[in-house]
Image 1 (cartoon, helix red, strand yellow):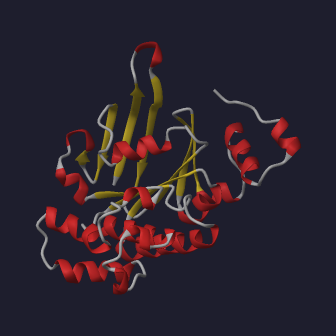
Image 2 (tube, one colour):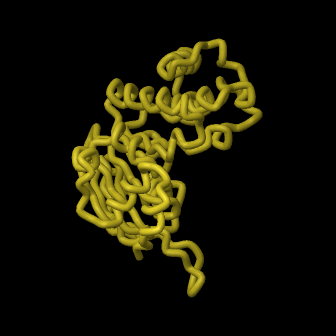
Length: 257
């Protein structure tokens, strides 16, 4: 369903260029949930933005459902949609829930708008009482449910998730993750999930890639992650860091180039 080969992304030019992604390659099968994990600045979200068609300045090859991302037009959005980290920033503050969900259908001239909007809201656990509310009248969890519903309006095959729970309260995070897992099964979605939280990856994904400084340093299945049996020292250090702050362990942290 997804193929990425030797992906490179740079920002700026010359000596000031930032090489955000350096030769990343991976494949994701139909219906699979694949995680990209690593510390902040490792290039995870940049890879996701390339797949979503939001970043055009890259080299290499990337395809989704046989569509070449580099040459894709509006057809790509019918196949892959993205859910962003901050639902308040990704929703227009002056657009109601109804408008946010209706707009993709109107742009692509898909009929039966009212019924589709009501069905999408039900799918993400929102009653129609929220239909004409604005983002500032919703909680963080409700806003993210709207963002997920909007991403699913065009019935895509692929869902790209950029830290979808990191901006939410801990009490709401589990609800959103369980919702995403249920939708994935019900709609047979292929998912790429970006996170720095290894517990979230272990809960949501079948396989994962560990990124550091723009490169994939290790790929593994989630069973290996749960056994805490990675191959690379960098991944072992991530696992140690995920357990919480420990003064002695922090002193032994190593920077991996």
